[in-house]
Length: 83
Image (cartoon, rainbow, N blue to C red; front, top):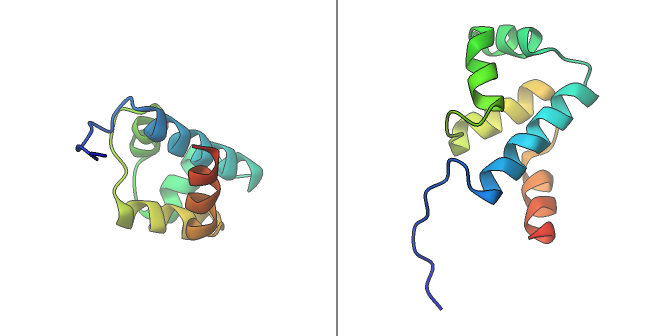
């Protein structure tokens, strides 16, 4: 069984990750502007991330989880169980 490296942008997993981040951000009562401010970024950074225009690396994901207030490992585990 091969595990070739796939392009991430637009993949099912990338879309699922973005959807969970948006869901968690909204559940936390944060706007894109709130989250951007917490990260020291512009709102457009969050907009590009949430629209799927940019990849989310592991460090960014951990930072997003911390800023939003969710457990990154639990969410990855959840997403993998849905696969």
